[in-house]
Length: 128
Image (cartoon, rainbow, N blue to C red):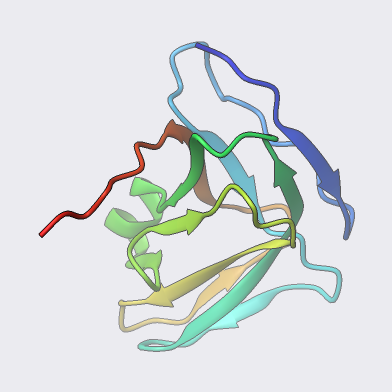
């Protein structure tokens, strides 16, 4: 199943792309205008992506997930484990990263920092 996702790019960002035909999520890249960002051990950083999205639908959500290579090899994970981009959010998507290692980690402009998937949503009625 495919849907159109309108995007607005700022900060020199490039449009998200699927790496392969079998990819479930698109790579999200750092849109750093001022150069690299160093995340010290145990610290967090908000990394701008230069991307804002709109599906025009309220039955889908964008889910931001960590990149397995960053977590397994370098201890870099999403600060909140998973990011939820609600269907009515129109601002720039930023990614909170956490350095769980004992070494500094450097994020360079255009580095792949997360993955984003569009998923269906089911609303619930909570009944007592």
